[in-house]
Image 1 (cartoon, rainbow, N blue to C red):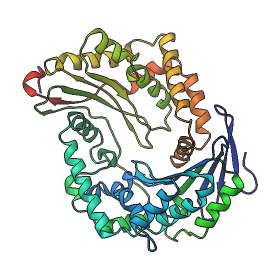
Image 2: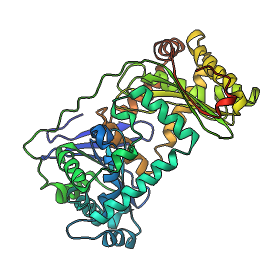
Image 3: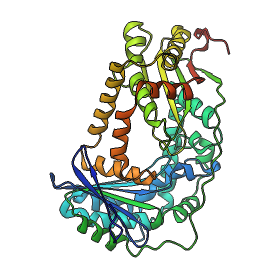
Image 4: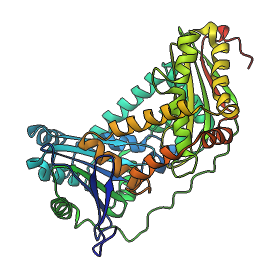
Length: 431
């Protein structure tokens, strides 16, 4: 329900919690989950801008900003910021994802206002010291080079770029050496000035805190933050159309990595839940179909799994296997067979129910701590799903039937992109 003062309350049926939603006059959305069991408060401050908002020539910008956001304000140095946080045993960190930017904090209840005030200073007035920018930029470049030596990372990079091409999702978030090498402090300032504004922020709190106290604190530290008169930029992203092809990289490694990727729907789309269940059935855990068939029964896999991340834009449905180089061709055939079976043969009721139980059980376990609760509800709000998504998703999982799952597989899992990394002479696969 929505009250006259713009507050909304939604009951989380799994944990019998009430999640309060309030919109401040400056546009900040405040979510509060009262959980007095432990004397801890966690907060997640989301900015609705991530690597998706980077120009292609500045790939890695949001990640670099997350690395240096906590390194200085006009009043505090990097050392003084760290000292304030550590002196009360709190945690404070920043991160950037494809669809959002995140500042997270956790403290005992008595120290929460002090650390929230510090978080407000960092979010609103970071100084991005040149020496810190240069240090973090070098560390990013080292990380990028390190990934270029890892077969799984190479295979996934090939697959991601093949599927997304000119779309921002083609970047890992770290960017690439040529783009990161050219990032400057001025680029960080421009990105921050453009997207860090109160009408683009969600603050989600969970723990020993009342709605009244939470709103009072946020008003105190963020209430005078006003949005600029210019509107937020309209994000225009290239349309994505599946055009599957095969890409290979020869590398002298002790195993081959084979990945199949499919362009799959974004979180708002109807088939999202059915495909989440299929990813769980195929590759989640030691009892999953891929693990049992390709590792336990046929001995083909060092590692085998499937994943389907939740994205605001179309996501990738990925299955992969790490195998002995001489088994590359037969392992790829095994992956293809198992995915194709999802379209040709309906899941049994037992298999479908097992996948539902596993997915819902892991979903519940992902909401045990205050940090996880604040993260989840803030994430739903940031993606535009609303805090009701928590209940809606669980009901949608329950409602998926075998026909729904098979039809979703037929719509999205027919023609894969294929990415292979390993010793070429052993593949037995024609380019």
